[in-house]
Image (cartoon, rainbow, N blue to C red; front, top):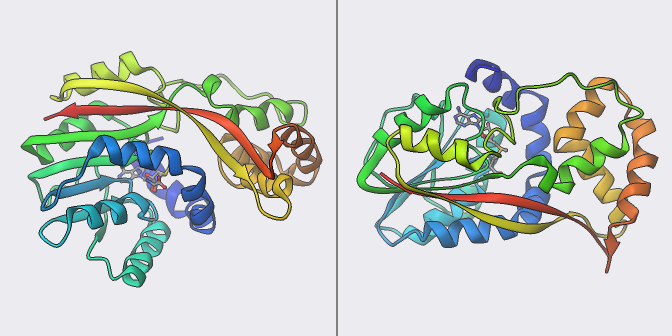
Length: 277
Ligand SMILES: C[S@@+](CC[C@H](N)C(=O)[O-])C[C@H]1O[C@@H](n2cnc3c(N)ncnc32)[C@H](O)[C@@H]1O
C-alpha cells in the first residue's frame, strides 16, 4: 500500500471500528502505554509530536505530563479517529492539538523535544524517507520513542484467530513481511538499520512482553470474540471472506481456553524503540 492507500484505509470502515473500540483498545494496551510513557519520560515544558495518534490516548497523557509550559501535537491521517481525539481533549479540557496530515511529509512545525508513537509508525510506504523526515522535525537534542509489534509468532492475540479459522478462510497468498502494516518492523535489526540510515543515533529495541486483555465483563468470551472480529489481522480476513457467523463459534471455543478469573487474555510482544536525534 502507498500512503494514499493507507489514508483511504484508515478513513474507511477501519477508522470507524477503531473509534468504536477506543476504550477497549486503550484498556487492552495499558501495559504498552505505561512502558512507552516511562521510556519517553516527557518533562514539564517539552514540545511533543505523537505520530499516528489515533484517538489520542498517548497525546492526551503526554500533554498532561508536559504541563502548561509544554505542548503536545497528535498527527494522524484518519479523520474519524482525529474527531474522537478532539472530543476527548475537549471533555478533558486538554490543550493537546490534533492535526490531520501525513506524518511522513508534514512540515509545519519542528524542534520537537520528543517524537513518540504507539503503533503509528509501521504504515509508511517508504519508512527510510519517513524517519529521515521525522529526524528533521526533532530538536537537535530530541528523542524518538515508539512501540511497534514484534513478529506475529510472539503475538498470540493476532495469530490464534487466524490459526483456528484457517479451515474457513481462503488460503492467504504469501505477502511481503516488510510491507506497511502492524508487523512491518517485527525484524528489530532491519528496523535499527532503517533508523540509523535515517539519521537517528543510539537506536535500541527493548523487548516488552505483555498480556493483552481481549475479553472481560459479563461474558468475557463473547467480548473476546467481538474484539477479534473487529481488530487485528483476523478481523479483516473474516470480513473479506464474509464468514463472520461461521467464525464466531470456532473463535469462542478457542478463546474459552484462555479464560481465567473472568478475563480472556493472550500474550503479546512489542519492541519499545528509543533513539536520539
Ligand atoms: C494501529 S493505529 C494506532 C493508533 C493510536 N496510536 C493507538 O495506539 O491507539 C495506527 C494509526 O496510524 C495512523 N497512520 C498511518 N499512517 C500514517 C501516516 N503516514 N501519518 C500519520 N498517521 C498515520 C492511522 O491512521 C492510525 O490511526
